Image (cartoon, rainbow, N blue to C red; front, side, top):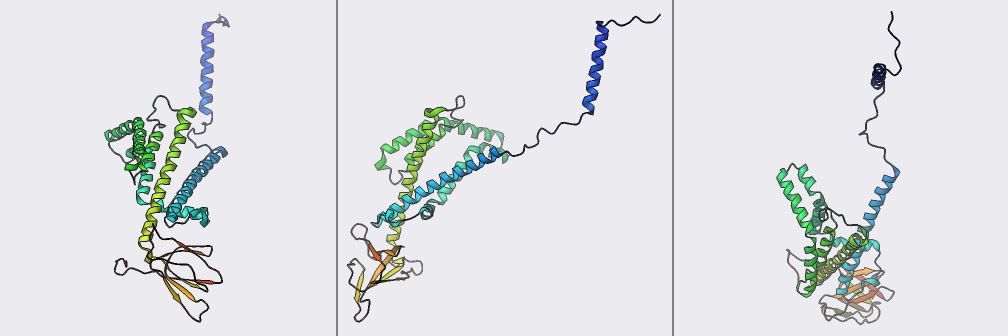
Length: 323
């Protein structure tokens, strides 16, 4: 006799069908084409390119604005020493950028390099194969410094209270305050609760930017004054100016020589002048014995009645100052 027919709800039949379905699924998986690699780089999107361009443009605008501001402060301090307002000279944006390059000194470049490397210092140490214990110690030191950002702000405030006693290093006060405010926004200083909102993030960043601008103004003004004093101390080395005039000019000062030339179209000649700046046919000159506290600067405007001649100034010999 044959085997009895299988009952549809028989557990053995159900299990056999499940095993058959599983075998078919495994066969389909083996014959299916492999999926695309998950680590393949996604094609660049227009949004990412726009964000990158926006970041570069914003950073460039910020740097350009700071350089322009530094140039304004440097040129203002420089020409103010010679009793000339820089605002009347008509300098444009390119000239101010050039003036600001005076601040690009070796200490400034070293400081900017350290500022750029500091956030990535642990990764740099790992790339240089520095021992793990040293890298761990550096991480702990960075966290400890960041968590004490209040001390930087407090030190800056104290230096501002002692303003008259810390000159010519007054720029250190706003620098310390700005450093403390920036450290207070770092992840190392806020490992649990990152700062968010206008009061905890927006206000400190804005205040840090203002203190940074103040520091740039102090440094630029200080360098401008130093450059002006150096130019005045070596005034004889600057280009010499000879002024020939049809009429007598009211030019007087230490070291200025006035000569009369009978029978000449330009009857009066003035020597002993040195050039500070030439702009728009105006010559800003000083007598060789010029003193900042008492003597004026002269503005000679070139027209039909005046002839201005430029000549080399006195050059030092054998590395010695002719004065």
